[in-house]
Amino acid sequence: MGLRIVILGAPGAGKGTQARKLAEKRGIPHISTGDIFRAHLSEGTEFARQIDPYMKSGALVPDELTIAIVEERLGRPDCRDGYVLDGFPRSLEQTQALERMTASQGPGIDAAIDLRVPDDELVARMGARRTCAECGTIYNLKFNPPKGGGMRCDRNGCGGQLVQRPDDNEDTIRQRLFIYHKTAGPIYEYYEERGILHIVRGDVSPEVVFATVEDIVCGVEVA
Ligand SMILES: [Zn+2]
Image 1: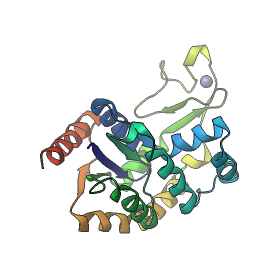
Image 2 (image 1 turned 135 degrees about the vertical axis):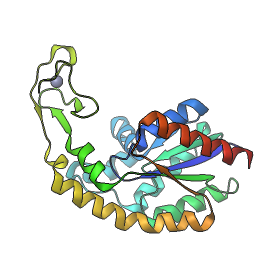
Image 3 (image 1 turned 90 degrees about the vertical axis):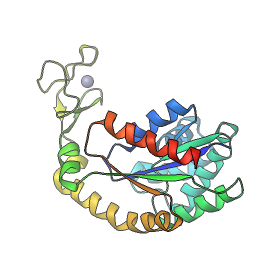
């Protein structure tokens, strides 16, 4: 029986990076709701027809639909030996649904790892995001600036102007963080009550964060 890990954290906290590294190291799938949605859309599945209007308008896909899509994904054979979830659960309803799904296969989720980063740091990280107006490549002026240091895209000689998307301005980011904290509170409480919530400092280098994440997962394994 494999490990079933949930990675929690605010937007910009580094969930994707940590989930990917952990999944790679353990040889289990990295399941991100964003990736699953995009895969359905590109394959034109029945789910694609249902999520398409939400994706197009930028609205959140409703809980019930998200749950059905994740449940289908977790039922595939590659998830038998465990998985790392990123971007799910995102509400108490999703958290309870995940517990129901996994209960049939064993004791449920093994660990929920929360990457804690102060809001000001998240605002600084996401506020430094720039997108190439030509090819859409995403840069971060703080962590991943274009080579040459200018405000031009360096990908394959693209040379496009780097711009800040409206999503990445400070007011929008603060609003998203406010909503995140409000909805995430009950998720933390739920996992804390189950005794499987692990809080990790996320405002250090990705390597240091990963070492801590690894320690936690090893601890869960031997327990
Ligand atoms: Zn470009």
